[in-house]
Length: 254
Ligand code: PEP
Image (cartoon, protein in one colour):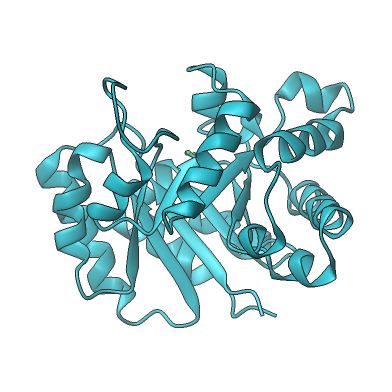
């Protein structure tokens, strides 16, 4: 049975005090949340402080990126082992801002996915089309290609541990949310791709989040779709009440 999973991507926002206050607010409110998995992904420099604020709560800690090598001369990078050491359970990989602003390729993301899983992290692997690709009718082809590239070479047991986030690039931080029908169409397609590459049990088990301008006002309808298993939330995860409003829109899963 898939559970809903709501994760906040704080991106390059907050400072130490604000990050700790946000984490404390979410941790406190999460005490009364049942049947929904929760995580926050602060900037890496605040992982430790936020981890302390979350200690003993139901909210998991996640990072926003990592490098695939274990150690060595890779200035500025962090390894999966370092994230585990800091208390991380999750890591976002292949976010569209990393793909499109920082030039990350599917091949690079794929190496990171393997390294994250080997270290015991749950990767949240983002896929999603640009507006021009959607308008050209290429959405499902783009998703198929990103899936094949970013998630290549995973055995079933490993794939079963991956979280996929469908994030149409045109909906991220723009206030333009995909309609529940547009999102559900892609989530269903992803599940079919999983069934083709693996089997029905893997396809039914993998959690697929939606991301892109999720707010308390649109969360329930999006999360009510049969193949949408949660949300990766950017802007609205920076305010406790908004993040809670989205969590309230998550239902007990099928
Ligand atoms: C994101 O950062 O993954 C995201 C979906 O951002 P926003 O919710 O602000 O669109």
